[in-house]
Image: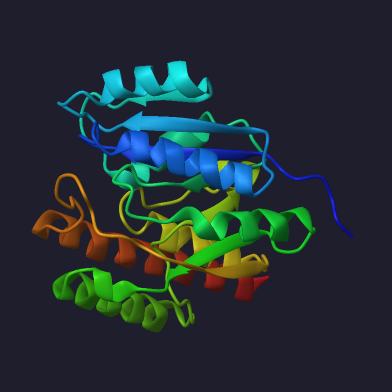
Length: 244
């Protein structure tokens, strides 16, 4: 049984993405139109940019008229920036769209149709053309995914792409991680709750402006610490469930 096309909040974490944001906004507008989505908002979370990101957002809002802007005075990272944007989201579903314009939203019309058909609770994407990324980034992603699946006995194909969440669910999720593991933790929580997933292939494209800000030794330490914290929490929850 079909239902009305839902509304969407596109949350765009942006760190020094002045040059990329116009293409991101055009991509979002085109994807929404192709998906028949008339009710949507864009929330740009400026993660302490020192370029003209704020000015770019102001100009884009005068053009599109549906952009909210918030700023972290100090850098918080992509996870905390997304969750801060989600906290003020007002639409049915929320999804992250990185401000570097790396992710192609061609999958979105099909995802919107799936959600309109009262099918899944979440839509989870996986990358169709990973070879466009540098070898070291592919290797790190491969190792991270297999480590996560091993630790938590899951079989996810990818956890760090675009996920479409029910807004009320992600707002109340109370995640332990606000860093790069936040989305893996969210999907693990949803899986444990028995939520239904639809999967969609997503293409990426080479970055045009700036450099990737994802990998560093600090990020690696944060990821390992977060995984250990999530593992302890899952173990405690499993023991509590067993005692009931």
